[in-house]
View (cartoon, rainbow, N blue to C red):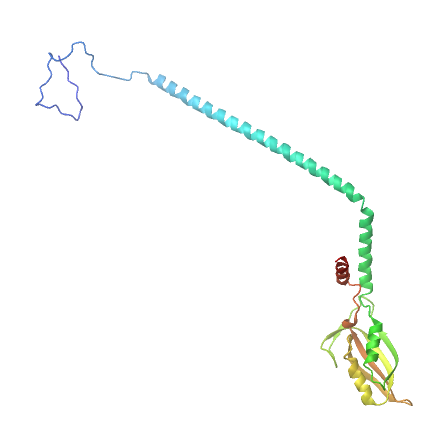
Length: 247
């Protein structure tokens, strides 16, 4: 008996002659294949293959972790070495600084003294310049007999007053009283007006004027403003002077 194998979609061509027993090799084996391997063996082989892959992945991860750990150890050692070097430098700088303890102490004391001096002399006035300016504006016929001043201590509350004659609102730091003799009242009035032009004085007004043997004896009260301060002991002025001296 002869069996003919063909593709399922391929229909035999009736025009072609069908092979007969006379054209076939009686010793030819039929091309039939089948997977007769048991399922247990197939699953076992696949399990072993997956196990090998997992073991390889585990080895790779272990190697990577070992490399990372070694790198961190090296970095930690380097950081500790830098820290030790820094501490040694700090100790060395402290030992060097101890040599200048006296200088630093002296500088701090000088700063404290300058601060106290600035507070103490905050209302310091250049009396020679202020007195010379008051005499300079006096008419020739006016003679100044006396000058008295009242300046509050440093830190005392000062007032801000509106000006009667002179610049607008000023900071008052004290008062000044002048006494003298003038030939006429109009000459004395000119002198009062002239006092308002002196830097550091404001609100000059005539408090009394009485006729005497030598003329009219008068008294003038005038406010002393912050413009008359010397400011020699201000920290800013000291710093500017030191900067100028350094240059």
